[in-house]
Image (spheres, rainbow, N blue to C red):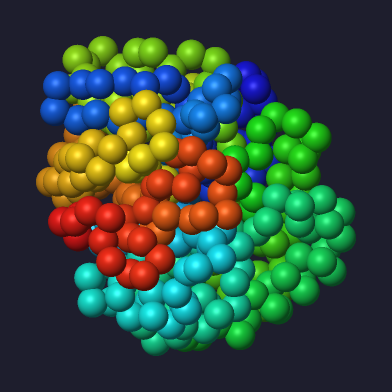
Length: 314
């Protein structure tokens, strides 16, 4: 997908974006990150960048780290236990990939905010039928809205430029209309691959010290080229696997995640946006055994029994 297509998306949707990062393994002086890429089976996407047009006050507490809470495991603990653990560890925000009712119910009055994703297979009906979007909102938002801080609805996840991509703008617009009809003010977004950038190097003239900043700035630069300089960026997936592939180890995962937390918590921003907080979510809460074999199963901060794979300085 070229910048022209990115411009089409930007013009079609007035609310939000998010964008997933795809590069090969990179090591840097004080910050190291591996991103999944399509060519190799064992390497997919290590980071997702979420870009939002919503007002800054929607993302208060940006320096506090959030966590992705996936459910692709047959041995995961009950959501109520997970939310309790997150509260104990002072994690203020999570992202879920589908509107699981047990998770949403467990979030009631927890003080933890959430980004709720739609399933990719739901994009076509959500785009084609406004009543499907209305039913989705009535089922997954209305029962929880007054008791849970829902920061955003994400229409799909990592949808590549294929047949499904054509349904993203319509799904976003119908969800937005359904929310408005229910008098609910929640931004709506989507997830696209970093391949929407025709060229991401260099994102600015600075000398970069880590890939994280360079990729965030690459998205800022691309958005500026299509008139989206006012759009905010939130990193909704970034992490390191602890096993299952090249350079995947507990030591590397702990080093990356804790350097990430330190880096983001300093609030220094990026070379292109100095001093600007980067709202960030770690991937992921658990090792999930129903994912593909290899690194896919080893992204968690925790084992399913709620013990730590390694300690993160949350």
